[in-house]
Length: 428
Image 1 (cartoon, one colour):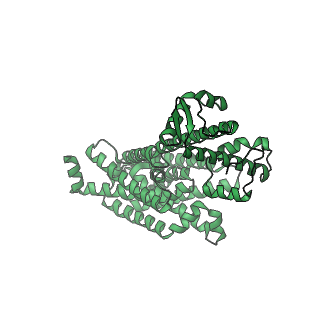
Image 2 (image 1 turned 60 degrees about the vertical axis):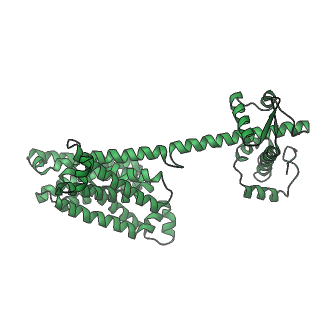
Image 3 (image 1 turned 45 degrees about the vertical axis):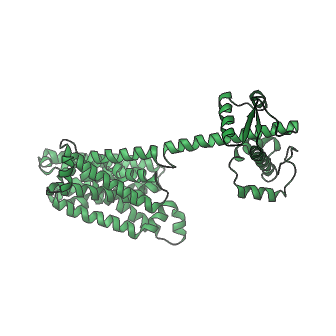
């Protein structure tokens, strides 16, 4: 707690520079990364991150200083050039985009390593800290860096806000955007430039190797929580900013811990947690929803088979033993017993002297499932021209998810016809 209080007192200017810089870099990268993620170009960030290294080295060689403005310009040029080449290769040759990305990434990064090695042999890299661009060194951020990165972050966020609708449309339906007259090529160029600029500004915090994670991971984590692009972008920025703040705190509390890698570790942990616990999209909630659906299908199939037995005996309310039900249609006995007890709790079945029978509500529900099954078989055979002996399996699946509106349409379509393709009565 003492360390926490000292950190958030912000009395040390270096703490302010590192913390604010990490937050700005992480949040602005996350905002741009949202659209890179939505356009399914996650690997582009990795290609840019590796391709900026020769630009950084070249800017240092030409300027002789580690001025962040010069380094950003150099990195921007080679990063942007790499994307242009990747796009050209994928469109003008038989190579796929992932192959072009791997090719350009390795070539540019190899050139960058050669140039960095040459600088190191000259004895300058260690003094300037230029080699820290490989793995990042957020603790090296100073006031001048903060001003430059702050301006770049504001430009990135403001540009995304201004062109939000266009970028959103481009991410989801580029053909429609082109059809309504939007400058698609110009917007692609804008997004490319924003991606390169975001990567370039974040390099000093997390380094070439980890920058792709900082660009994509906040957006991936946010995607688990919402379907709204606006909310997703805002949430990605918040998660990115939080990871930047947390990474700076870890580095302060444990000086041996590097800030950049911890930023990536924290946002990766958030993404992993989101993967499991997010509502609707999380693996736990999806698993629960799947089990709920399986139970529903099991219950409806059981009620349907009881109705079939009742049709044979002309007595829908006759009690049935477990053996009799299994003989009509095989169910695993353990699963069958659970379903019978569940339907009894829900008021669809009663148990008398070991036999199971419908309640009025159970009879109505079982009758509806049978009706939907036979209506759907009728639709498949007459409207889709599928042979009657091939429609059962499809009807078995779809009968559980037909909505009341679709049910009404099917009834009207066939004018409440009395029999299905197998001449069995459709119970209305």
